[in-house]
Image 1 (cartoon, rainbow, N blue to C red):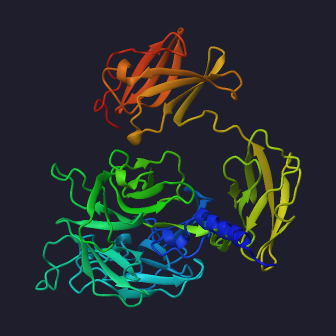
Image 2: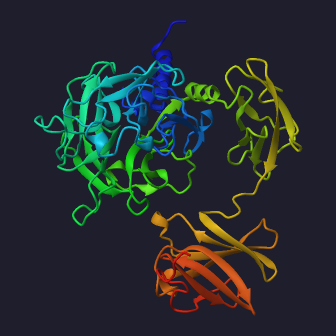
Image 3: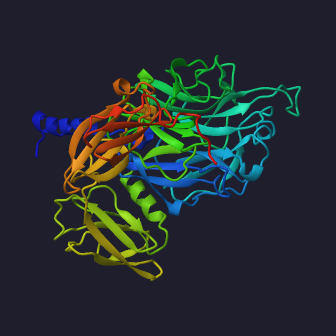
Length: 561
């Protein structure tokens, strides 16, 4: 057929619209050039768990629940996927980056092991620690080359901590950056006093590196920089390592900066004290963009506490990060990396690390509410379903390990008004029978964010008194009450006590209430500013009034026995 101007225009317009609608490539979000329009299916989380156990300083994997960056499943049953037999034989702070062409991955990590002071004290490992980083390469995130130990820090460095990398289009190379204490040239034994600076070197192959240069030296100790690019600017997040004092109120928290040049030694200030008020202290930030919306996440390691805690923002220039309120991270995650993965990569990772060859690793179904509960010990899968889900012809998709088969096949329609069984056959012929149950659920019973519920049967109804959650630093002030006749349908009775107008001795941290009835009076016990108070009302619906005008149990008035 002869192509007229019109017949040529239509496919060209379709192609243009397709390109405009395509999501950014994995390379674009990991510091590499835009290469393809692969669609993201989730995120990979590489991390370590700390120096408290023998294998805590080795690399673990977790995979997000689809494109939800706040809910994760541990791979390999939470055991390390990469271990070190070189250098200090410990791996901390793993970082993964995709190559510019999108066909290769590099994983780098700190060469350090602190378990039982294997490498020495924290002071010693910053004077006589490793000057090298650990490096692996992979084409699929599952199979990695043998590790190699490559020196990147100068001879006067006492340590080489938390290496990360970012692709720089201008340089046509990766910029690898890390923290080092640099000692005077006339101090070969590193006995003097100095502080950590951020250094960088460039490489095209992670085998040979340029001479290192100082990247960030504000005149005091800084460590753990991480970077993300957005609209031509690089946003850098770094830990302020100073000791807390009146002159450094944001020490031990994260500082945000930006520059249009990745290797610029003088970034512009955006914000500091990131995380303060929500966590006690923070280090090891990792930053990434949402796969599905205009939002960024910053995971901050609350070392000595919960490990990673997620924060989020819709505006990098604002410098305002809000702690996420609904999340389930892996057990004890410490400094690591979150990166987007394609559907093929996601499925490959999920299949590569089953607990055994006969494991079911995941299950999904139409009408599912929440995530499947998979019990390896009992060979049982529970699918939480919406109350109105049709269970008569449900066709759940079950994922099994690489090389395993499933009978009946995944996606087969079956009557799940009663539990159904499946047989998983491993590549070696081993078989195991699994029971899959679909359970309609009405959870959560209350809309919104609530915690610490106290439930009682009072005055012919069931009553729930919870903490009102979702405030930075758990700084809420209000308590509410909910009642039900059938434990299914709940009535919101509104605020029954508000610390601001109703309590004179506390203004925040309204937590963990409990209710009791005596002689027709209802006594409401509550925590506020780490003290315990009591309020009283004639009805379980309130309104409640502070019974004492002071704490029932004041801060410092008791001690443990």
